[in-house]
Length: 225
Image (cartoon, rainbow, N blue to C red):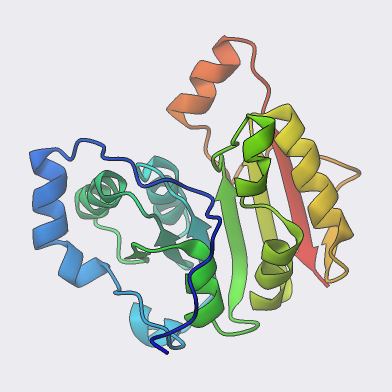
């Protein structure tokens, strides 16, 4: 066999979005320094970042605005960003260069497979899952990333005391997230239900626009027991 079998259901669809010339140039010129190829083998995170220290996984960073802002505000913490879409990878690479960030690395690959194969148990100080695809149609809910097996896998990769922070602007998905996280025995809620938005999570342009339209955002913050 050539590796593990492919999952039938994934939480994303690879869309043929337009990659700008700047994003393509960033992938070609900056990618070799900041991108880590997927491999079905444990990744030495300290070696990847060139130092020991807390490591946080950023799942589905989109265009990289939030990841870059968090990394710039927390230079003592290292951030491993996961994204499957090339334009987003190019965008974050440009932000890394513009801000002179040394504490961000990128893996352009499926988050579940990275967690299964590249991240050792107990290796992470935190996981960020901000605004994952809500798959709003009921028949597509099975594609949502936050499901019991995924949360179980996340919890196993967190060190004791490590945090998982999820956020969404879809109310039914928010309640699903909260229920699934609360049902995982290895995790404890840090709030009574949903958490107030931690100051450490920057408000994105997308979020500000949603708030202007009256949309609400729900945060769930859990700690590894």
